Picture 1 (cartoon, rainbow, N blue to C red):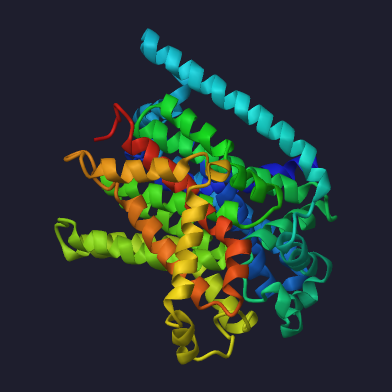
Picture 2: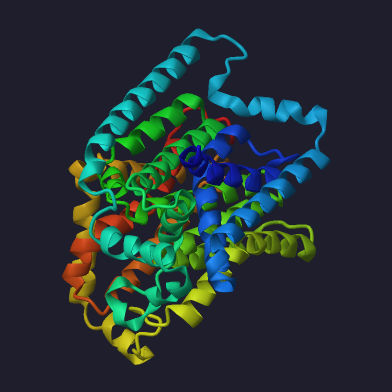
Amino acid sequence: MTFFSAFIFPPLLGCLLIAPFLQHTRFPQKILFLSAVSFPIGYGACSLLLFFAYLVAPPVATWTTLVAGLGIMIFSVKKLLSSFRPTRLSFWAKSIGPFSLPKFNLLPTVFLITGFLLFVFILIRTLDFYSLTISLNVFGGWDAYYFWALKAKFMFRAPAEWQNLFSPDLFWTHPDYPLLLPGSLAWGWLWLGKEAFLWAPFLAIGFYLSCAFLLIWYLTSTVSAFTGYLGASFFLILGPCFFWAVHFYADVPLSFFIAGATLTAIIALREKEEKLWRVSGLLSGLAAWTKNEGILFILSFSCLLMAILFFEKIKSKRQFSRRLYCFLSGAILPVLAILILKTFLGTTGDYLGSGRTLFDYLTLLFSGWDRVLLLLNAYRKSVTSFTLWRGLWGFFLIAVFYLGFRNGRSRYKWVPVGIFLLVNLGYAVAILTSPYNLEWQIQTAFERLLLHTVPLVLAFSFETLALSPNHQ
């Protein structure tokens, strides 16, 4: 029962945390969305609660986290019930999307069943292969084994001395790195009372499958359920996504939060629903709480959203401020945790706290075109590799060009392209100013950096190239 409850509690917390913001809105396919985001948001919330509990009272952090989680769930249920309207049941009834066939139509039904069976077949094969590989690295590979599992062991084995995980003596473990995965791992161990071998593989596959379900939700909402199943199936056959999920790296969870935050913001813009900005803000904040690259994403994303809101035909400054406030209020707790970690705990890092001056960074950044050309060549080789990406980036490029010819049908569809460009531009600057050898950086990290935008690129490409989208 304890083991079962450890699996159930975080997704239930994530579901109840988000559900009040979807109530009484025009948000499409609510049940599908909750099925996609409950797991990542739930474990993100548990890791944040554990972090703040350790800051306040480490000896009772486990009980504090449990009580706080239960309090959030009770408050959410109370809020849902207090604003419950029977007439609104139809909105939730319509949210089951691909599981309902209100009107029989032979050809669409055949396509739907075919897409569903294809997705189920690939999903079963993926889970089967995953079950055969996890025994080789139950704590993940490389960084996950030596860094993230080590941080979780500090939090589990010595709660009173957990801050030693930020010690400069352990500089090789990246002391200033965000703690979503270590916190989620430690939370599960604390709940179970032991360092369960299956917990890390469970977390890894949960975040991985959430990316597929996110694609089903978005493409079902904007195009069709058949397209959603195709997009999710495409994601599951991409080797890099599965490979880094097996090794329990933070890149797959980060790719989920980047896609989730962006796609939710697009829906918020289209439907003009202010409450949805809090959901997008929370997902953006959790991206920053997942990995340092997530901090770069939330900065890029915030700038892009402010530009969109500024140039939108908003009736008043108050409406602009309200939307911006909702976004920032959703992101506040993860961002606060990052500020505390970077400022007071993990004060040494590759960039912040490295001791390098602005002149050092500028020298590396403008040290010659050879380094820039080497980086551009790495992009070219990676995106043209069919073995790795199955033609994904060519598909994306076609969608980008096609978008320009669809006058009147491209409202906010360019947002993922903007995010892709801003994020990768930031990565390029980070790589060029890294203290490590450029070729080594490209060999060890480049594939994972591209992975961060894969679900978002898939959602954009399938929506743009769809023959009959639901949303114009």
